[in-house]
Image 1 (spheres, rainbow, N blue to C red):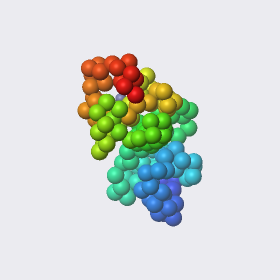
Image 2 (cartoon, helix red, strand yellow):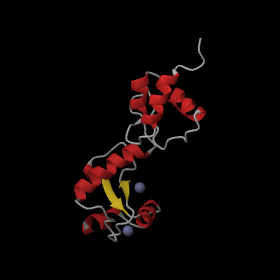
Image 3 (cartoon, protein in one colour):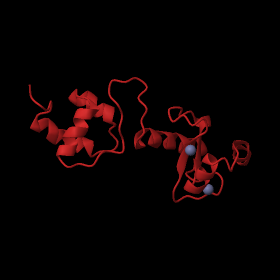
Length: 137
Ligand SMILES: [Zn+2]
Ligand SMILES: [Zn+2]
């Protein structure tokens, strides 16, 4: 039995797709019919850095810790608020998307809010309450 399930040709193709952060890991798993572990190992052998976006194959409700689902959430939030800025201070250079219920899988518009990194931190530290922010929206 071969040690690796991917052929050289597949690996070349995989490298190109892997470099595209818009393709989630579980999509790659589907395309190549291998586990995310196999992909990560193959990419490691090729000296590619571990992706930020890691989805898990085969598991329902895969909980992405990476940028992909957050990117989606951020897009929803930008569409909802029609601007990309901190709702508290209006800072535009960097915004985070915060999930009110701390559940990153819940990307419903009313669960999301855009915050600058500082205010995001303050929300997590409990220094700012939700009602106050919502009143200002
Ligand atoms: Zn702010
Ligand atoms: Zn948050």
